[in-house]
Image (cartoon, rainbow, N blue to C red; front, side, top):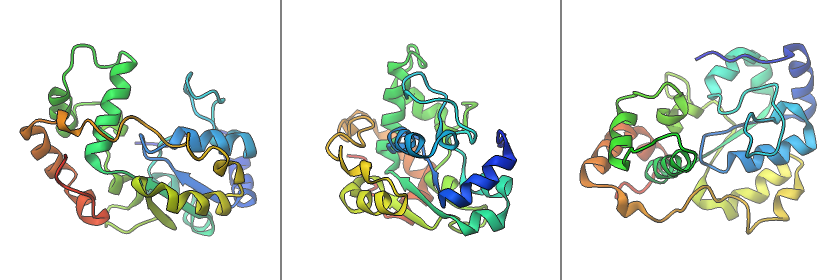
Length: 215
């Protein structure tokens, strides 16, 4: 994976002024947050999605911390407040599958087929298979962001993020924020799919103490 930063000189000037960066793991409310940051801080936080309602960003969405740290330089990265939101792999896989299915990206594919292909890394886009750990850690397993929040603990982290990022408007729509597909429906996973997900995302379950049951 490579990261193409548009207007890199401007980005390196603007980031210290903003003072933070958000490592946006797919299906963790990342678009809602990027929309808020885009409206307050501009094009660093854009996203190329017709459904997002915001413009293209200077830094692509869903870039892992290690990759962006390398692109920006360790000194700049380490000077920022950086954070990420992680989600139980069962919920995240189901949410991503539902999102792609609704958008016509997986015609005729069942959930069990999707899980099989995902755990074999048969999709080109890293957002399908890259783990939470892969987004926030380097190859040695060291966490590269200042804080990691769990998706299922939104009431705890939302005010923290609103304050640290200077975006109090995040609190104004608290009930609407952060729904990226149903947290239920996990009974759709068959036994084989649960086993594959537990094995493929084993480090996520261990590192972030997620429920392994898939129910």
